[in-house]
Image (tube, rainbow, N blue to C red):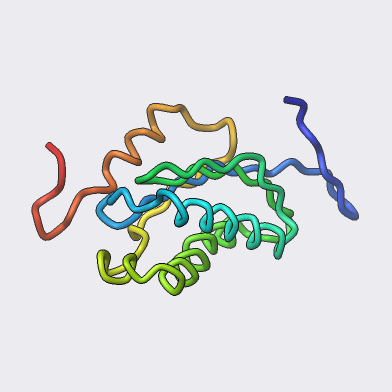
Length: 139
């Protein structure tokens, strides 16, 4: 895939992020209509900021997002996807309010595109089911 360099007054840039986040305790709640609505919400938030969604993959227990942002937006803006989608999904699907105290885990993995290995991403996903009160999840 050819890289598309964007320009703005005084700059040429290609800023892309690989973002991964999981539902609380990595519960597999992102299927069916929830998955479809989540993808729709992610695209709406990206459109709001003028970001390009390169790829979005929603699995039952985690989300992979490749997004390109404008230079004027700090990387912390990319984390808005979690709050925005949580608010709307919990309003649209009552079972998400009753099954989980919050929809998303507190952590989010974010790296510049091309700067991270698949193994690192997998380790991040696998640690998301750890419950602090239970002494750590998987051994």
